[in-house]
Image (tube, rainbow, N blue to C red):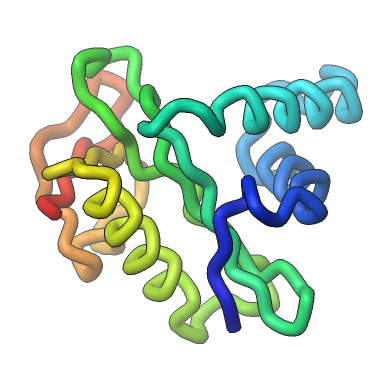
Length: 150
């Protein structure tokens, strides 16, 4: 089991973009392939931003999941940065502790990049607290805003 920066393992870019589309695309009627290609381009363009990182978890060359740091992820809190985002583990690998591995990796990466805290918005209740997330407030979107202290 290894964790890599997607930037160093671009052979997984297409699969990551497809999984992100399936999990989070709000308008699935829009051309799927066009959206996936735009996602791949956006990911590649973001590699130069120190507030962006996408880590992947791989076992025997199979992608297990991924997690990201984003410079921006909340219209309501535009001044906060960076954001803990897109934690994803494939369904067949859930409930095996892989989200904990991804969480630890992204928090370590953010700390290594010099951040003192990172933010998260989510609809999930009582999930990220086990990773150290501190509740800040409920957003107008009804999502909860959290902070991780590094």
